[in-house]
Image (tube, rainbow, N blue to C red):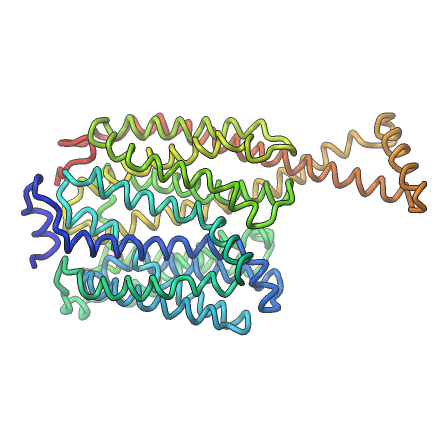
Length: 525
């Protein structure tokens, strides 16, 4: 079998898909699905894991943080490892390692064990994600991108969206152990198919001699510290905490060394030259912002439903399922449109739909339920697919095949970092704005406000009749109402900011060069 570069460059555009490649590709897609799903499937059930392992709230947060830090290091590294080991060896090792690590997580008896196993799972699993994007744009001709691009776009966006649903169901119906055990059988099958079917490229083991170990160390410090600072910053009051301050200093030092070596050594651990391609640079920027929308809204909806409506994880999952269904149904439509519409038009429509959905959420009240959230969630799901397919095609569809391996790692990294940055900003906004709204609302509830005095009197008298301390209970109730309203107002502030962000992207779309060839992002190498 020829190398990936030769394969992509030589096959005719109208050649039918190779069944062996298709089977291998779908196995890789399923592996990527498991890896991405594992982030959200666990986040929905952290309370169950905390109870099962007897961990504190600060400790259990590291079940997620350790996974994300390890994954964000592996994603850009995977392109280099694929060149050295070959896609077959790298993906098979990642799939097998992810499966073994999932089994270890299920057997963890302490929070320390769980954190270590999750870090291993995140690091090894992270290698599967860029491999799929690289394979899609090297083993298939441009004419088939209307089929393969919606598939990887759907998986990359559907997995985080349905994660709360799957996680809530598994932890309710069985136990938290099944959040990890569910990966075992599919993981074995994916490993077996990957090892026997993937044959896209050949290893270049001579590159081991040029491998930039200092570049790897500096990248790990840079990206790992960045992820830690973004994940933990808001909870620890940012730079008022010595650990966040130390993490920031390590991040800056790691970044300086990493970027210096990336442009100085012959074989950098991550090739940043792909950013010289204008479409890849803009595609990565859009991917970053889509990460904010994807992970930010997957966080905001459950937070509202849990904090304001009092839903448990299963009820939240059932409500959130709408977005996943909308994505699934829109994927084939997005594929067809990618061959007929200018991708810039598709992206503009998607960004408009996203902005409209978040704008509708600015009317949020404490009574909103499934039906009020229905249209915003449908808009979010449909718009996500309409954006992701052309973004993938624009970013990776015009690069030379030799660059796609490294570029796919960078492209996926931007989406993950977008999610991390977005969640950090969203959490900080929610905390600061809710405190400010609470202060403003409290100013109007002083003893000089007759309506407040009357309310406290009537509610207090009602509780007095039951033999309780009516005045204290009434004050507690009033404080709860103010807290809830301050949170609602802060949610509205965040949705307003997201609306402005996605509306502004419609203007940025106009700066992208019109792709040559097909609307779907032909092979303009």
